[in-house]
Amino acid sequence: MDPSKLPPEVLANQPAFPPPLGVKPNFDNPSDTLADPLTIVNGVFVGLAFAIVAMRLTTRKFICRQGLAWDDTLCAVSMLGSIAHTTLCLSSINIGYGRHFWDIRAISLTEAKIKRLSAIDIIYGIVMYFIKMSLLLLYYRLFQVYSSSRKLVLGGIFMCTLISLPYVGVAISRVVICSSFKVNLEHLTYCYTKPVNTAVATFGAANVISDFYILTIPIARVRSLSIDSRAKMGLAAIFTVGLTACLMSIVRLIYVGVNFNKSDPFYRGAATSIFSAVEMNLAIICSCSTAFPSFYRRGKEVMSPLLRSFSRRTGSNGSRTKQENLGHFELNVHGMLDDDSVMKGSLEPIVQPIGTPHTPEKPPRILTLNMTRATIDVEK
Image (cartoon, rainbow, N blue to C red):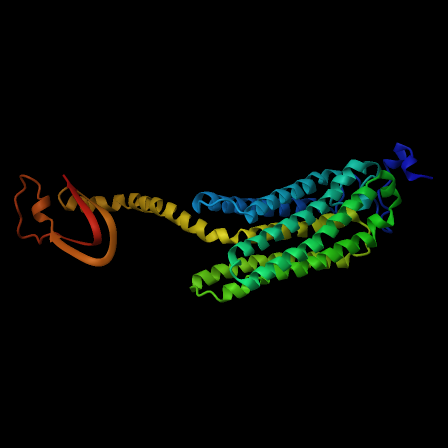
């Protein structure tokens, strides 16, 4: 009998996939679900990546006052794709994403819902391709004067295109073949077992290779630079982020390999998408690394006067006693201080209040200023 023609009351109590021996389906409140990890990881990493991308575009446009290049545009597109990936993942939780297949009612697997879930994998493949193109075009813009770097970048573009296009094509074919209600009830082999895992594992392995290839391109150029230890620490931090993204792609590949023959697409797919979210957003953050120094310098320029003003205000209470000891006058010094010159002079003839007898027994008040440029205003 065609399972899609079963009465609704039967389908309402039939799991989408037979549970393991001794396991009872729980449609209403399953204990083993990935809803919370899925929400937390996606929320944290997408929010962080979005802030970093906004910093990159702001720095490029308003601080460096340069137009957006192709690598900036692809970075922004990748961020939008990451947001779309997260939106699909989180909105699919209420239809069973992150649950075991036997904890989902078969009747709930409509064609529209299945297509929406299948789109998660497609978006991942497209976003990873755009992120890598953004990094490679950034390298090309920075190192185009070096012939060897240009060749490495062009080779990387060819490699990533050769890897990503077939994977996206396979993912789209799964949407076409595996989205019908009947297919899901019959558990078509193409949709749930080795063919899907083979495509994911193959792409994952090729993805790892391309990740490390892209990470190593700028190393030769950076090693030849003569920079101080602080700049080296900054570069090390940037490469650490990129290395972490590469390691996350390895973890994702290992997870797919361990669960290669397990037919539990909603649960395994959600677990894989958690690793995918971390990998995507760390790669986006790494692609924005060149904007960090300019943004830091500009932020330091803006914050320094505010901090000095705050410091003067907090120290005003401690200076009132000194002002009273000098005869109730205020001394305002404006200028750039340094250690190049020293000016010494007595303020006694200047600040002596009118009508106050001179007291020669007191030592003259000495003012020592270290400055190159200053204006001194004395007010009664």
